[in-house]
Image (cartoon, rainbow, N blue to C red):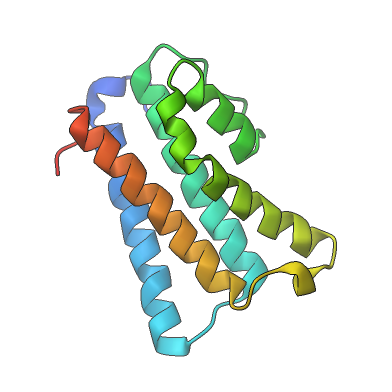
Length: 143
């Protein structure tokens, strides 16, 4: 769970990105070793990791209201993208993860792509890489 520091100058953006990278690497290693991961838990984990990135970037900007604790990633994304339409590059990735969760909730795993758990991890990694590259380019993170 993401807990933001009261003082945004404490390197929390770096900490969040580092933690998410470590967790994604662990998921990727588990997939390589085992070949598959539990679908529901993996989708939830991917959603949580993307949520942490979104909230950390919103908090780091210091100008936008951080969404309520129960907000889903699409609500968090709306806050991030407001005034910065270039963030829309990852909108469909966020929507894809929500789609996976909705299919699981409705018992419609048949509507998911093959190896959806792997796709969820890859999608979360893609969001991570896009957001990190952007933060590096903006001088908010070091490479």
